[in-house]
Image (cartoon, rainbow, N blue to C red):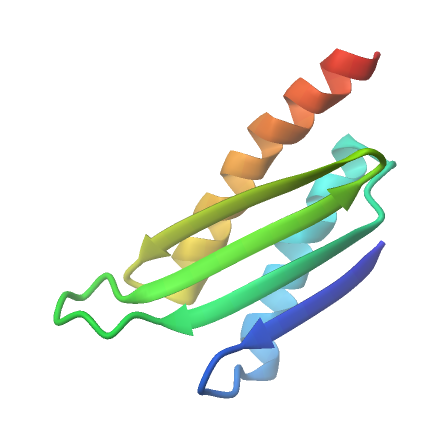
Length: 97
């Protein structure tokens, strides 16, 4: 699976990228048909603490799965997005099984 992290207006440190890669890689264990994944990390310009946004897009044969979460930290947002994608991957897998 190809893996790409894109950051908007900041540079992510290596530990954050590794954390997200480990989370997304677990999806491949569930469903081996995943072609690629793209993660977008952005800061929202709101005044609240929950201004970190993680968007995860998975490309699978014949479809594209997407989840977007906003939390206090990028780790929490990425984890939530991956949890949402686990449900989508599970449904997709059951659909074609």
